Every structure is written in C-alpha cells, then in structure tokens.
Image 1 (cartoon, rainbow over the protein chains, first blue to last red):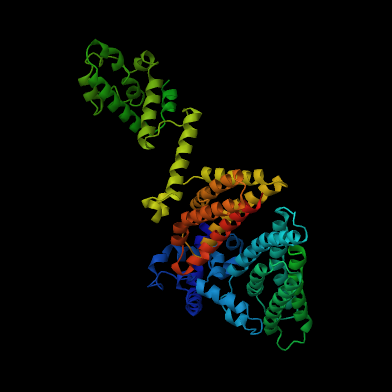
Image 2 (image 1 turned 60 degrees about the vertical axis):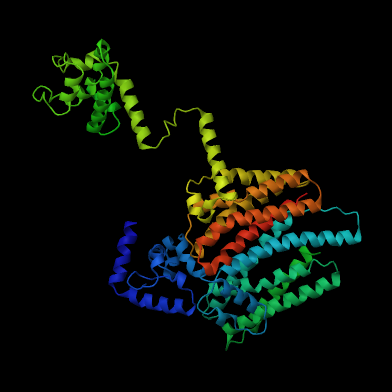
Length: 269
Length: 288
C-alpha cells in the first residue's frame, strides 16, 4: 500500500496524467458510456460526482497499463475496461455478428472490445448445447425406438464446457501469436471479442437442431457453420491487407466449420 | 501479588479501577448494616494495588474519599500493605465480573459466547439464517433496498442451500450420482462467484460476500422445487413447479442485482443470473 501510494504521485508530477486523462475521456465519450470512464480525477469529473469510489479504485488500478504489472493482474478494476458496454451496444454487436458478409466488425468494436460477449455467449452455448443435445438425442432415439426412456447425460455438460471454452480461448490466442509472428499489429482482446460473438449464431441454431429430421439438421448446421466461418474469415481479412496470406484465412474458416461439425456429430447425433 | 493482579486486569488499569470503584460504590450503597463489613473490603484491592505507593502521602485523593466516607469509617486505619494479603480471595471473581460487564456493554447484548452451550450457538445461527431468508425470499418492505436487508449476511445459509440442492439432484439421478452432485455443486458455487464478478466488472457497486450470500439465499425456492420434483414423478407437474420456483428465484434476485449496476446495464447483469437459474431448473427437470 505504501509503495503504491508513493509510486502514483510521482507519475502525476511528471506530467503524464493530463495526457492520459484527455485520451481516456475522449475514448469514453466516443462510446457513450459515461458510467465507467476509467481515469477521471476529481478535478476533471464535474458531472460525475456519484462515482468517486469507483474512479478512486480505477486510479489505483491505473486502467490499461496496470495489467502489465502483477498488482494489476489480480485487481478486478483493471479488467472493467473490457466490460465497458451497455445493453444496446451488446445487442447491436450480437445482431451484426449474424451478418457474415459485412466484414466490418472490427470497425464496430474499434476502440472498445468487450469480453462480456465472449464470456456469456460461450457460457450460454455450453448450457444450450448440453441441454438441447440431450433433448435431441432423446428425440432421435424415441423415433427409432419408442420404448426409450429419458436419461440425462451429465457428461455432455463437461464435454461442451471443455470444447467451447477451450476453442473460444485458444484459437484467438493462436491466431494472435501467428499474426504477431507474421508482422501484423493485432490485439488479443479484439480477437477474443470477435470469436466470442461469432459463436452467437450457434446458440440460435441449437434450438433448430432439436428438430428430429436428420437432413434438416445437416442443412442447419452447415448454414450456421458457414455463416460463422465467413464472419470470422472476412473480419480477419482486415488484418491481412497487403499480405498474401490467404492460408491464414482458410485455416480460420476451416476451424470454425470444424467446430460446427463437432457440435453436430457429438451433441446432436 | 500485585503483579499477578495487574495481569488479570484486561483494560487500562486506571479505567479498570474506576469501574471497580463505581461498581462497588453501588454495591455498598445498596447494602447496609453489619453485613457491609465483609463486602466493604472488596473495593480496596484494586485501589490498593494500583496507587500503592501514593496511599501514604495522598490519603485524601479524589476517588477514595466518597467511597470511604459512605460505606466504612473503620477502614482508614487499615494499612495499605496488608490489604492484598487479607483480601486475596475476593479479587478473581470481582475481576471476572467486571470484565463480563465490560464485554456486555461493549459488544451489545450478547453475553460471553465462548462459554455458552453449543446448542445456543447453533440456535442463534439458525435463527439468523431464517431471518435472512425471510428478508430475501419473501415479500417485505426492505426488499427494495436489499443492501440494508442483508446487512447481517452469513454464508451458512447459502452453503446449506447449495449442498441441499446438489444432494437432492444426485438422489433423484438414476445413474452417475456423484457426477451429478459434482456438476450441480460446481455450477452453483462457481456460478455465484462468477455472477458477482460479472456485476463488479460491469462497474457495479456490490459487496462480494454479501452478493454471494444473497445469490445463495435466492436458491431456496429452487430447493423447494427440487424437493417436490423428487417426490412427484409427473413431467407436467415438474414443469409447472420448476417454472414457478424459477420465477420466484428470479424475482428474489432481481432488486439486488438491478440496483447494483447502472440502469443501462441492468439486462447485462440480470441475464447471467437468469441463465444460471434456468440451467439449475433444467437440471431439476432433466435429472430423473
């Protein structure tokens, strides 16, 4: 505590604070989210009196740079910048994630990538796949053999959690390192955000996959998987302007399609 | 002797002796007649042990005169040095008594909780769980401001409700009982933590363990639903019961979660709570 107290005022004295505050305020004003502006020092936040507690926490957590040191990694307030979204913003992003060909998702989230979408879309997907997968399996068995009794397979939940969380965390990370290696200037939080929203369509299509008609199911999952894969690949293209690296796009496309097929084969067999 | 005496005195010596003297003053003023002689000696030890060096030359110090003048005139000739030797037995009960009084006045009406029977402790915790449950789950005027309602939060209630729900689900499961319990327990325990973190990350103002406590208490309707569903075997009845208890749980959690965050993010904070309760409700129906 003593260290943090002495380290902060020196940065103030060096004159770095006004620049940071201006930048942050400009950013915050851009996304119409005055509630969570990160570094409002008391002299600067005239209209925001009610949140002295929060702004104090954020000045201690020091916003963006703080995840670079160990104190910031374990502080919740240093992650609030990734959850700085309102309901209408999230709804807007969800709707735009259903449109695979526009390819401007990164422009939309430009300065404010959120992890809320990633966390809760993947959690919802885990639950939906595990529960509806059980229902679909039961319906299929019921059609072939009407004496089948309902049985809930809990291991669907474990498998779905491993696959969805693993995919949503590891694949964007892998592409981040790959593109860093290839010399593009990327940000891992944006990749997480984009891949997280790309999973949203699977939640919707899971409800349709309950219909116990095998042909229809394959059509639905291929459409949804293709849409999601196009969404990922076309958005990723904006990072590869000028480079001749279509193999990266193809890899992203195939991975997303593979995830869709995995859902179909393991949960809606 | 005087060393061991001062060891038993827990507070500042001067305040302790003041309290003793006032207390003894009250005792002495109540008791009259020849019986006063024996208790009249009890006030002297604390007095004698602390100002032991000052007694010879300041005999008319401020505290002593009222005490002596009121109760016992025959006491002054008593030498200060002999006092501890004569009245050695009385001090321990006196010290303990005064300490208890201090504890009683300092920490509310609760008397010494270290020496009470175990049953009293359990009963107190149970009654607190019941009163918290009433404040959270049942309609009452404090629900609008649950920060006030759950000021006296505890984690025993949520613990019991989570364990109970996990056990009920695993009892009603026909296969993989232990895995069902593990999944249910992990879902409920980790779910409460993650939901609280979600509110914190959305910039809400919430007390971490209070929120855990509240989310645990909100499981109570689902506990009831799971219990009924375990006894009834009709799918339609189960569906209705789970829907009702789901609505009840969501209604109980709504005011706390919605007031914690900015109104524009209300849906973002409430959706995960709803998701967790829906998944628990689904587990209740599905596990058969």
